[in-house]
Amino acid sequence: MKRTADVVIIGGGCMGASVAYHLTRRSITDVVLVEREKLLATGSTGRNAGGVRHQFSNEANIKLSLESIRLLERFADEVGQSIDFHQDGYLFLLSSPASVDVFRRNVALQRSLGVDVEWLDAADALRLAPGLDATGVIAATFCARDGIADPNGVTMGFAKAAQAAGAAIERDTEVVSLRVDSGRIAAVETTRGTIETRAVVNAAGPHARAIGRMAGLDVPVDPIRRHIFIASSNPEPKNAEPRTNNPEPGTRKPEPDWPHSRIMVIDFDTTFYFHREGAGLLFGMGDPDETPTFDMTVQWDFLPKVIDVAVRRLPALADASVSHAWAGLYEMTADGNPIVGPAREVGGLFLVNGFSGHGFQHSPAAGRIVADLIAGRDPAFDVTPFALERFARAKARATGERYVV
Image (cartoon, rainbow, N blue to C red; front, side, top):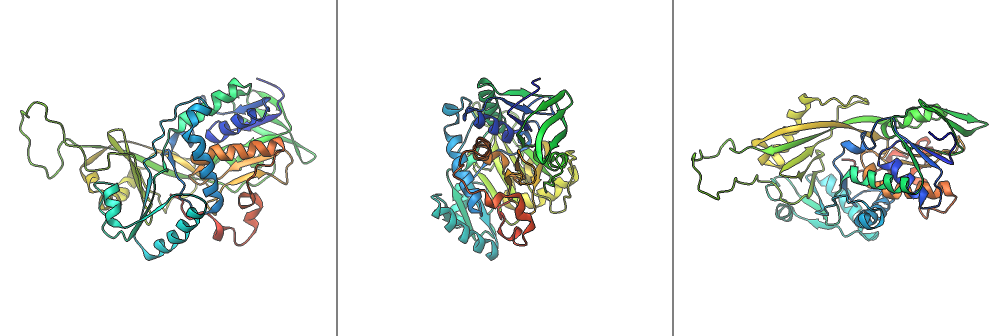
């Protein structure tokens, strides 16, 4: 392992890999990316649903989406990796007047920034998402350029391109401390030795607070467990007529009554969401009772609570089987917005943390911004809404992100 580097990046998920990639594009190639696991993208990156959307309530997040999705659309040509990107859209279902009011304001903001968002009624939603039960839906929004991409493909694309340009990637290497001299980063201590450096990027996802403490800095990010379930259709729905033992030749098994495309459907008021995953269905929902934890054990007693909500919106799930499930960690901040930029209290420390469930989709732009800041370039992006210091202001939460799913 190298003993000196211009930049050390802590965290080998999509965010750290993006920073590494963009640094090498700015001719900063003396870079070491440190990942404590044996493989990249095995933390939060590898456990998310892969969603990518323009539909946010905060202007800065919408701008991150605009830049990020432009790169994802040309990722194979520019970065050199296939990412299985399906732009079948995001459909938000709104069931309360309060939600409709929020979305009306935010759709106007999104459109003002050039995002093509449609305002729909329940009948329109049904046409876009067959099998949906739109009872109680009073409005919906849809953006066709939103979609689903492969988090592992994005991470490995960034990492391989950075490595080919000269960056070093050290797996199975844990950071144990940061050395700060006279208020500035001086070195990174790892389980495999010390790397002297003048610049460190904290891209440690849900572990961002622990890395910050090594430099005497509080990074207010909490790990919150989120579950994802995969359902497969049963060959015999509960209320189906008995089938003959000798079906006619060429007879195909009936398709489940859920969308054939990979459209992401989100019931905003409950946070229940789903999209097609192969022949099955990926779905999940936030747990309002979840408290900060690093435990990623699947809590199967949470599944009935999800199903109770799910079958009201997608009745076919009542006849489906949950084939498997996993849990990952959101890196949450108090206002749902990330922390991006230099740490004013510690020279040479850069933060790219707390994306509150939308880190994967914003990693292309966020990595570019951090790389520009390290390189001394103007990032052409106002990171003031993402400054660490905002949490000292009383209005920080009020101006945060409303679309945390």
